[in-house]
Amino acid sequence: MMGQAMMPMNFMGAFVIFLCVALAALFVLWLVLPFSVFGVKDLLRELIAEQKKTNELLKAVIEDSEKEQGRGDYGDFPPPGDMGRRGTRRDSD
Image (cartoon, rainbow, N blue to C red):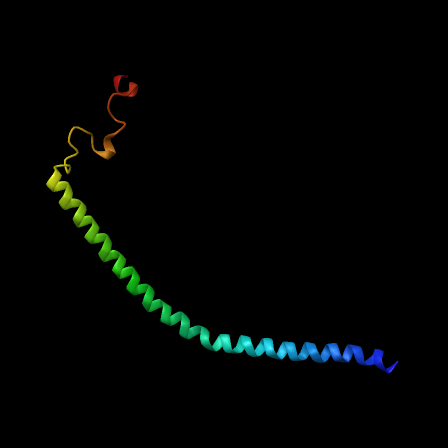
């Protein structure tokens, strides 16, 4: 009989130990979290700035190559915004 009464106490003791370990882990993570978040913000700002520089450089390279090849004026092709405006049935109405 005594063995059956001790069984719930053993589970309760194990549960309390598990709960204490889990709460201690959460406490440590809660202390470390602000340092990791604020450390990442600066890195993200640097990455965004570098990406903007890269986009500007790529745009300059494309413009230079278009000037060298004479493609800046679209040649015989209509500009991109003018594709569907000519030769439609609505224009003749």
